[in-house]
Length: 198
Image (cartoon, rainbow, N blue to C red; front, side):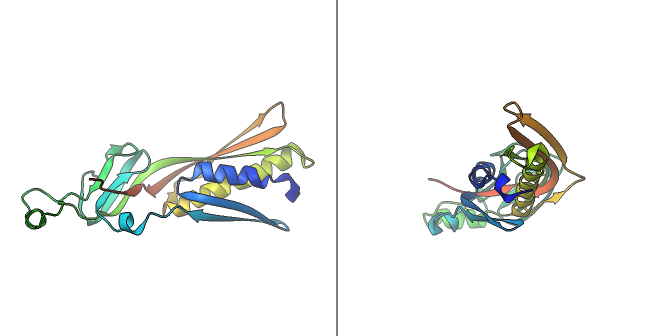
């Protein structure tokens, strides 16, 4: 497959649209290898180290919960939706720590910490323009990018794939573009820190 059949801007666009934590992505072609470089979104230190909750980044079926700070509000076997509270950073009313913080005039919150693993599905899609390599070459290139996106997602979420991914290939625009979608079932850490806003 010729390197010219990969559209670097298209790959970059798909990475940024697929992974919310990225603020920058670049594709660098080195002979027969494609190197993808990314920069992650960072929270300001004040927000990153303040109190808050762990919420679900995506829908899923809870597999296991491990709490380091705060308390779990979900249990294994439950189904959760994106944005749902998983580990609360709010102290239990009446607890010693709650009373001590409120007596000092502080908000009764801590920084929730922990992991919530759930069964989830993740879809990675890549589109490649059919060029000199033909439909087979474009399909191979799109499949390679979609698989790389899926692997990046698995790594970022500390996820383990369950079984083999499903692959769907479509020809778009009268055969001028090939779209490949890779659907992965995995057990992933779906928790995301959200700061408490007053």
